[in-house]
Length: 432
Image (tube, rainbow, N blue to C red; front, side):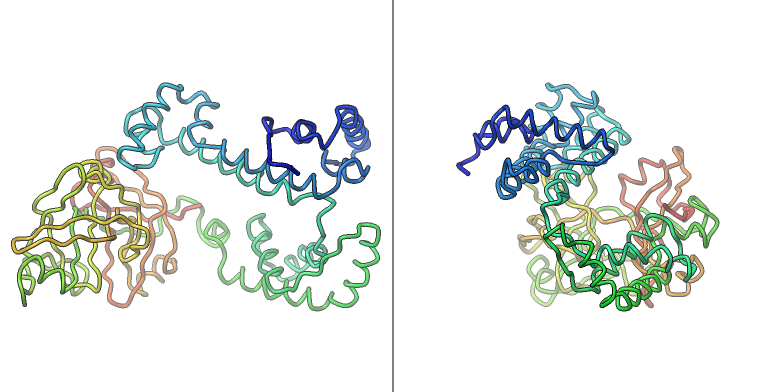
């Protein structure tokens, strides 16, 4: 086909514009599609065109992929919010300028400026996600694409085996079992639909035992490591209190490597301990530095010790607007694709090429704590903070090590949102 001139997102109109289909052929195909549907037989327009030999599978497939690309490009958060009636076009244009200026997430700016609330942003993001998934999957779900017979064989046996092995049969666990099973089976594709049933019988006889074995192992794996939402059957239910934790507010700070300590404070310099932190071996140093961003500076930023292999600066969402540096939410030490910043000390300056983050809210635990809370390392939980405005923080990551002390860390923005003191009690909750 020639370079695309598509101005429509409808498959039939796209094909007629490209002269791959006449209007009379399109009308006939739409009538055939309607007749299929009246007979309770699902039929996509592209499938009807290929089956009737009106268009080749190559032409239809190319059009479907171009349709997908157009839908993905037009499926922006701003467009979805506009369609839902949550914003106006002038508001979108104004926020877009701020978005480009400070490089902050579009949704966060809308919330910060009071244009949208968190629920509206989440609703729009969910709809955007569904549209993206639909656009990606649409070109793949056609009868003129090969069928993986292994997937059909797994579907035949999965439900009986889940019941026999007394595993959770919720949709999420079933989907996980299906995916794990197929990952352990080499695909066997059939492109000729006329011989599909014969091939299915043949492969069932040859690979049926292997398929059941892989499904059985997948069930064991999912039973041992279920998704958190499925632990409702094992625990008291979503929102149940798993335990109490002390939540401490972590203000902006930096961690420095030995080389950077010397560049900022002088050759052979060692940090001076000011006070110990709760985490064993960690301390706040007497030394402070200056963060120099494109839009502003922040002075007296505390250095935490001891020295680390690589330097990083941990700031809040408010700090990033003050500095003009967009800091992604990351776990400490995960610095890939993060922005850099200039750090000034009494003896010199250091320019980090990367390392500015907003710390992912987290709970430090020992293995004994993990067993008491019935959580695993890197599991996500919710935490209820009871301050002036009781707030539930979602997706709090659990970090279990032998050298930890039970403690939750949040930044100043999160603490201010809940109206809590620098040290407050938090209820760790089972999340969905």
